[in-house]
Length: 312
Image (cartoon, rainbow, N blue to C red; front, side, top):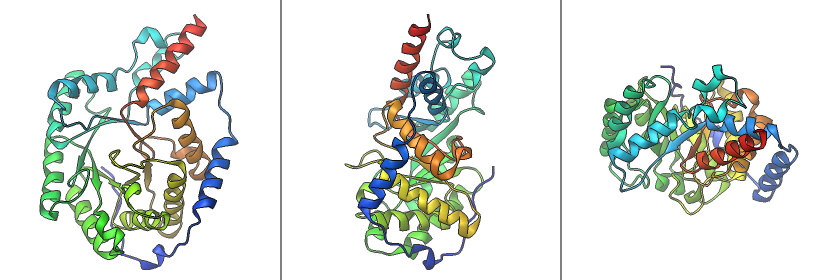
C-alpha cells in the first residue's frame, strides 16, 4: 500500500492570513458558475456514489446493522434500476468507496465483505484515536489504531487533539500525528479529522491541515460529524488552498474528505465542482476525494429512481 511520507516540520508553511468574507465569496462564485441539470445530474450523482464513505457511528451499532450497511455499500441499487441508464458492464463498478465504522465493528464489516466477495473492492475505514473528542491518552489512541488494523481496517480516520491547535502548539500536534502515521504504517491510509467547527478560525483550519500533511496524512477531513459546524464550502476551500500549497512546496499529494452535513445530491455536486475547479478533475477519484456520509446515498437513490421513472 502506498502511503504518504512524514516530512520535517516547517513553520514557514503555517504563515497565513485569511479573510472569512473573501473565502465565502470565492467559494460561492466557484460553485454557482457551473449549472448541472437533466442527465448530467444523474452522471454526477452516480459519480458521487463512488466517492462515499458510507458511515454508521452510533452508540447502538450492532453486527446486524453493519451487515446491512455493507450490503447496501456493495449493492446500492437493484440491477434492473440501472439497465436503462448505465451500460451493464459498469454495474459492478457502482458501489461506494468505503464503509466507515467504529473499531469494534470493523471485524463485522470485514467478514460481511468476505461473504459478499468484495473485500478487495470496498475499503473498510475505522474512526480511531478517541473519536470524536480525542480526549484520551496518546498510548490509548495509538492502541486503537493497531486494533482496528488488526481487525481488517485499511483506512484510519484519526481525530486530532484540538487543544493543541487552539493553544498554537503546532509542533506538539505534529509529533502526535507523526506517531499515528507510524502506527498506521503501510497497512492503512490515514485520514486526519480536523474538527473544523472546534478550531476557532480559518487560519487554525489551514495550519492544522498543514501540520497533518507534514505528519504524513493521506487525507485531511473536515469533521467528525458530531460538531455543531461540520463541512462547509468555505472551510473546504481553505483546506484546498492548504493542499495546493503543500503540493507546490513538497510535491506530496493529499486527498480531501468533507464529512458531516453533505446529505443531498445538490450539495455533493457543489463539493465536486469546487474540487474540479480548484484541484482538477483528476482529483475526483476515491484515492483523492471522499464524502463522509450516512444519508447522501438515500438522496442519490431518489434521484436515480426519479430519472428511471422519467425514462420508462
